[in-house]
Image (cartoon, rainbow, N blue to C red; front, top):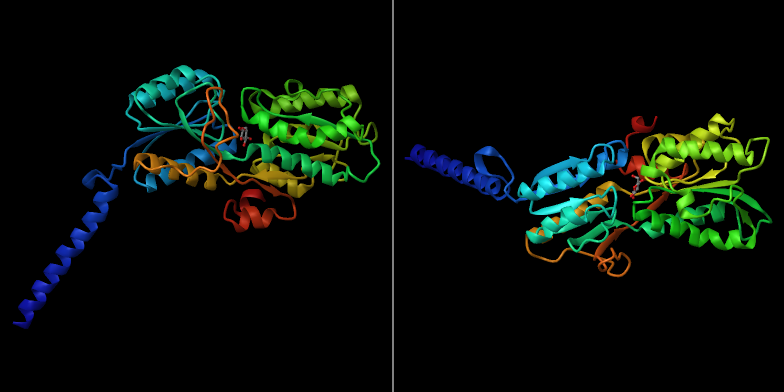
Amino acid sequence: MKKKFLASLMAMVMVFGLAACGGSDDAATDGDSGEATGGKIGVSMPTQSLQRWNQDGTNMKAELEAAGYEVDLQYAGDNDIPTQVSQIENMIAGGCEVLVVAAIDGSSLTEALKGAAEQGIPVIAYDRLIMNSEAVSYYATFDNYKVGQMQGEYIRDALDLDNAEGPFNIELVTGAPDDNNVNFFFGGAMDVLTPYIESGKLVVPSGQTEKAQCATANWSTEEAQKRFENIISSVGYAPDGVKLDAVLCSNDSTSYGVQNALLAAGYTADNMPIITGQDCDKPNVKNLVAGYQSMSIFKDTRTLAEKVVGMVDAIMKGSEPEINDTETYDNGVGVVPSYLCDPVIVTVDNYKEMLIDSGYYTEADIA
Ligand code: BGC
């Protein structure tokens, strides 16, 4: 009797257990095949040649899959605009229900995204705003103006511009002219630095102060290096020549090119100017520790991915995504509701806490 009861109890436990497993499986996956059933999401990234976009893509894919979605992740070669356009067209034709797009050229996707609008597919602009398109529903990024402002303030404070006599020599380097973020990075920094340039406390000996003159196509390290080599030789900058006090660089890939040019011209950690950056790319963090770069801006791509996955999930479930800015980002046809994440300054003093203790990098990554 007792044996029979135990046997049927065991059977019940097993059936129950299986049912419970099956239940939770069914919610996220398609039974036997193990495929996600939450819907298909297209993720379009600009390039694999820069560390950050690889991280962005990997994080987005992992987090979307963990939330139960199928992911079509595409990188557009090395910043190849026609490739990005056709990848997006394929995502639309291939049944993606939401598109997440980090545009190469903010203005080149208008036609491709008309198809998304026609089919009611919401588009989230990722990190970079997509211009001149009504199809863009939301924008998620870091506070780009604040990034530039922090870089400008770092230079202001490091040179003690409010108290020191000066004048100080500075040169300016920014990014791709077709990336809308450049307006905010360069604009934010120049809002801090321009009054000092106007008062003569800061001097730009190359005379190159306009955004177009300071731009770097595709944010290329080689292009930034070439331009800076020309500046070094035309102005006569050298450790024992004309003194260079600071270089504003909008991001790490351009900053790296500037540092290469200065190192080749004989500069060392002892006489490097103040140099800014953004992204905390591994080679730049190494240079930060070596004393070649003064600061970088940390934009934790895990945070951005998490926010965007939250947006996708809200859209797919018919609720309102979380936004915290409805004023700043006008893409030419209207203001795009945005979520702005907070950037953080990283220097040699806090890189361990910000980058290693937070699990973003291992010691070995930047050894
Ligand atoms: C991003 C930066 C990045 C740059 C080059 C910008 O749009 O916001 O983080 O360094 O593109 O890829």
